[in-house]
Amino acid sequence: MIPPPEVTRVSHARVACDGAQAGIPAALGHPRVFLEIDEHGYVDCGYCDRRFVLIGGPADGADQSQLPDIASGASL
Image 1 (cartoon, rainbow, N blue to C red):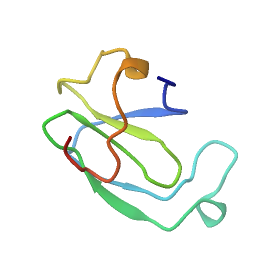
Image 2: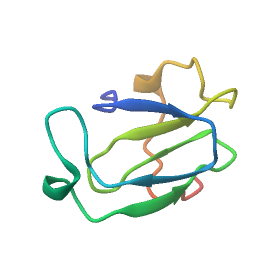
Image 3: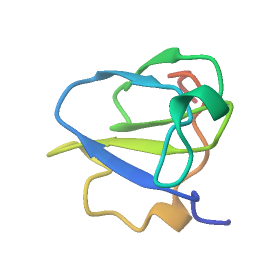
């Protein structure tokens, strides 16, 4: 598996992503989407593949390249 391009650790299970990052303002990103982290402890943005990992969750500290993609909060 390929690791996600960017991993962001968050403290809340509901997150928003607009594609903004260092060097790319929100206006050049993608539409803002709201994602829900489920029991796996992480979720991937369907637009930019940024991974949001819940601090203290099951995926926190795990090798992110070994975890499957979970887009838009969908469960496996």
